[in-house]
Image 1: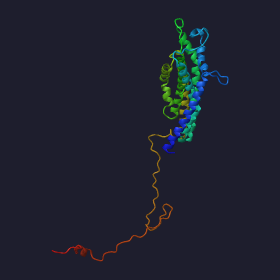
Image 2: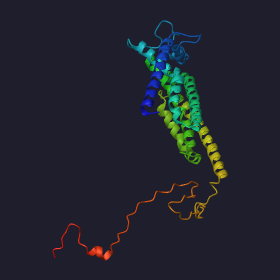
Image 3: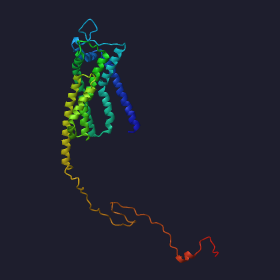
Image 4: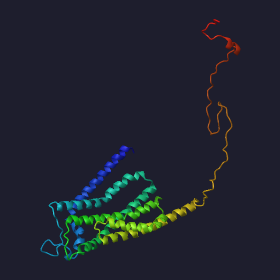
Length: 326
């Protein structure tokens, strides 16, 4: 396949992916306020963590103190919020299609073994991302409860729809992406970039780095979501280290079975220095059996007949075209 054909294929697959995202975005835009198949609407699902808080921790904008509504401050808040949530839902819902298109584009350049590893990597990555998103959704009530009740005796926080949904979406995405870090470590170990010994030696520093990362990455800056992400990443990272340990042991056993670890680096390799058999000389006009094939004799070369004049006389003769004037 030529470079132009690859570019055409990339264009077609990108077009299919974008079309699928556009369709699912429209669906997410409609789903934001409409329920399907007995499920709650997308807006109600995302607002549920906020509505689960005590009524005294939420700001009320109507006569019913138990109502659960968010605040909008500009005329375009409703439309932009619905479009943003619908687009995010569209990308997530269309992930099977654009992941399939991405997989179909890179598969022809992979070996059979690499295809198996890549398929396993994508499957585990999807599972980890979903697990992280679910964990983020479950801790949102606790995180909001801490943030909204820490000074409820003095003031009541009125959350706008844009700020609340941005917090929820960002927290879900950050948890999902962060859960992929241990998988990257396992992939680097499988590629031979890092070893179990190096990871075990730097375990304390890496765990400290995970806590620092969780403190910086969580959008709410609350201790609950930070600690939840840090502890979850620590457990996943420890599991990744143990997988690297098993993988390094398996590589070591394979090296022993193949005899690579039993070799002394100071011992030269066993090289057969016996000279190979050479065939004897052969005439040009005779076939050679060295390669087991018959060679056609070369045609005779025309030779000039010898000059009967003695050499001394030829040297004394004047050159043709000149007269002896001396």
